Length: 156
Image (cartoon, rainbow, N blue to C red; front, side, top):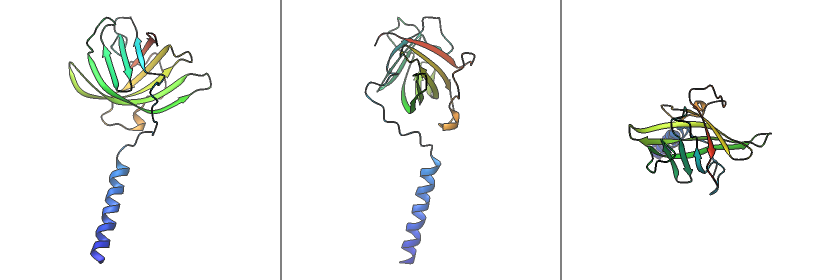
């Protein structure tokens, strides 16, 4: 009986350690019509993000080298960690996920995203962490950041 209790206690402790050791992102439950879902474009030849078009849906994302392309260069899964609205009415997201593409496999990303109050301009600063962690998110939207990109909504 004592050995069973000891085994049960050790199991509970080990399970707690495993659960606490993993990063647990925010518990935001996305809506089917999230503000960031849609097609976003920037016709400048390769902004610093590297793509002229990105399509974000509840099912994931696709990045296209050129607006006219019909085949994406990258596909991936994107999840919303947290969402909030600032005092000016802009919508902010912290998103994370993994993309795969022509020249790479399973690249992780963590983004800080700002959508204008009108919902027509999306600014992004991204990071490529080794492991997901809440401390890996960019802390501000800075157009001078080498990982900054800006997109404009292509209809809604």
